[in-house]
Length: 125
Image (spheres, one colour):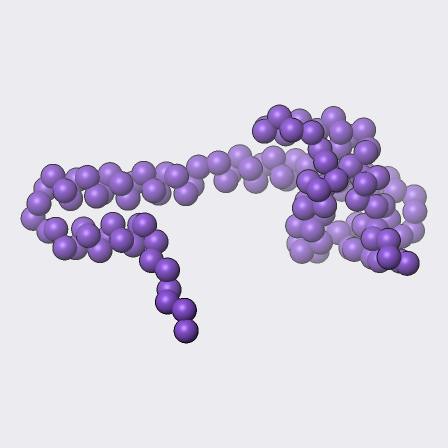
């Protein structure tokens, strides 16, 4: 059976218990734990906002789709609204990125994935 991996934060907390009374080391360890806390929380809120904005673009594109089956991932990626979306990392909207976003929307239940003759289509739920 595999052992549970101990995180850097857990190791620092173990060291903190071992060095009680040494104010200088305690201060250093607490500072390192604080840095780990900041690091783990940084960027996630901005990334979530960016993803939600792109989710809205995808929903708008799928809402206007006239096909009963839905749209293919590549067609969504080529839509002018998806192409015009400005990502914070400066990269363009690719089929892979759209596919990842569609997978998240399918998992949330907002989009339905249908396969017909080895071709995958997406439509609003």
